[in-house]
Image 1 (tube, one colour):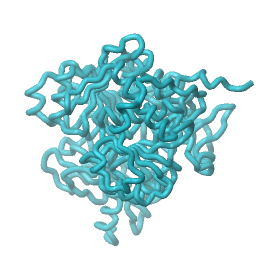
Image 2 (tube, one colour):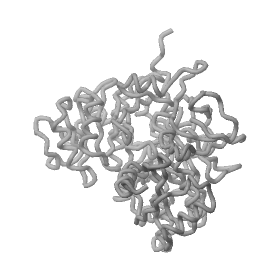
Image 3 (cartoon, one colour):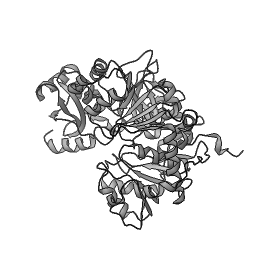
Image 4 (cartoon, helix red, strand yellow):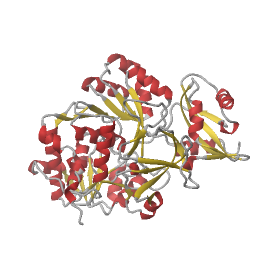
Length: 530
């Protein structure tokens, strides 16, 4: 039986029901300019940009690159592209030129939309200039800010006045591609992840229902819009439910605290580094009322128990852990807002998600509490763009379901709460003993002087491998004291052989600690001494 393309809501129409029923309701707020855009106004902007892009030849399944800082116009672009049945490709602006080039070439896009600004690196123009496949660059801003050949550049602002105010969304099926973000490529070439309209719609509804979000909520975006943290945690749920999205262009603790006060923000999403800086900004917190906050979602990295406590004390709100990955839904588990919550756990599976913990060697299901590889099945699973071998390696059919092998080591207790232990490929073998960095990190974080920590592996002449720690100190402490602390409280093979102190840990554009960078530094520093 042929599939009815109209059975699924187009991602580019996520705001349509509210725009039709309550067009004057506030959809988005720009926290930098205080611009406030209603649902009706947002719908009109999306339709007009979609019409401009359609006139330029953008149609079903075409890939459209999107280079932009965090602002309202970026969201307009993403939804306008999807509304045409085309596929937006949001770009991580923090990537080096060679990885940007690899993504542009891999995407197969012939058109790019660029929003010039201070946070858009000069490398973008150079990459697009070298990309023979990108025939048209739509500049959402001043064309003079773009150094590309005039024959390839189209000024969006010059075409918008003549564009119609309405554009019906293209009918789509559940399996049609909706958006194509790229992995960071920290362990190799970035991979495009194709997420479908059906998967995006399911995840938006499941997340919204699980966290009990409604039209009175105002969600704050402080993480990059090219990352699923912001889009899945705030933008799509708020536009779906009729809430308000408050956009902050880039993270600044004082600006975020001020925005919470000014716009009565009820929740936000982020990463541990963001929340650590928020609770530490005493001057901003003293100057503003943050009592509107009811909870916050934290993911992308382990969340220390001390941070959960300090956030709760500071904001009188809960900091809830979440686990997900771009190809996995993206959200897999989330701590509930009500009922039982367990600090250190990434929570329970979202409605519609099935998880299984298996022995990575035998494939057998692990008993409760025993760590193994996390397998995930859900309507939101993606696939890799133009990477059939990688797709086959990561996804399999089990009992008629598509199942993703996440590569993450996780344990699940009898109540269904998940605890992320680490990556399978991060495991150290220390003198025959298996060890994961998170085990050492969790131990060191119990020391009062340790504010933050990351553990990586280095070669060891006798043991094969050994852990080395990078520590951010809250108060003075010596390397010898921390090594002794670990030896007294854990197995000998798990103590860090060296402890290096740093003012802060290096973070990537999505807020994750750059362990590959730390690994290179550690190996250079201990070369031959262990």
